[in-house]
Image 1: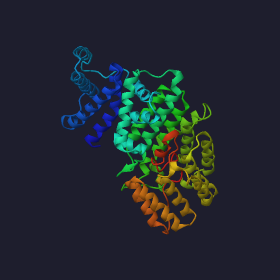
Image 2: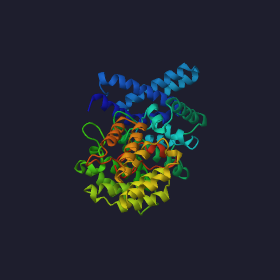
Image 3: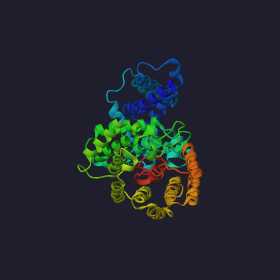
Image 4: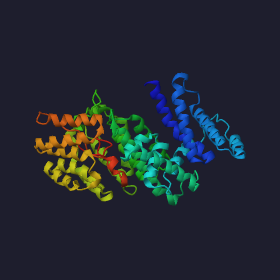
Length: 441
């Protein structure tokens, strides 16, 4: 791995720990977040040539602390400046509670005084390490709009005087729901980037898994935390086989399953097996169960599609939405034939939430191809290719359109990730080769 890439990975891991430590000590989230961002920029510029310091977290904390001092000095208030400077001595050791700091930061960003979009956006920036542009792409809004949203969220935390504490048990359930959505969104953006030249961003998938593991350690009794971790592991296990040497997507049915990460599959299957039936069922557990059915099939033709369809029917009762219907249509096509799947897919044509979603057209192209309607399938694939901002997906969909009529041409999963709440539209653009998004890869 290149030095710059290693440094980027390290900074992404350390950023929420440093920010959490500073907010815990000084309370001013907005100022601390700005200071940490400046420290990260300084590290990006200095470490490649000067080397990574022996204690990189302490280095970042020291630089960010000095930025805080400089900021407070520029505001005047001599007494406050002197008091702040006395407190802000350079840190020489990382905080002993860095894991709790990162988790507390997750819950801080999901405070109920913030709107749900602001909760998600702020967490993606402060904890997930996404840039404002990446977050804007995730929410399908202009970058300037997202920058304003993040700024307002930080100002709201400051104005409300929100404390840097874990939520009470009474408040935790709702805050946890948003935290899980955010971690899911980070993973999806990494597993299939919504735009750009590459299909996958392992920095984001790795961060999402790392943070979800931390949450699982802290909240072992929460079934949906276990379900989300299992879902991520079972999905990420297929990553080594889902692109070819050129970086283009590979259909699930065509993937070399010996390349799948068996350790991750074993861990994910064991985790969801222990969880199902012991706690209240939730959408992440159901998605993990679907993913496990895929991963346990030694060959594509051994996939238990009737079981997958049954799980989707339960999922649609627990967490109904257009993305679930999209996925269920694929399973219906596998069990009852492509025309049955197309009939169900047609119920989504009037849903505004799917109007800008290229995966609806990609799935339609796949089912039309299975039904033998090459002309209509070609048109659907071409339309989907024009709608996606992902260059690998554009190339793949255009290739599918051009290959129609050639023997042996199969289709990749162009379904959509099932998620909850207002993030369904992003989720459909996030992950083309696993059952969260679709089941036919």
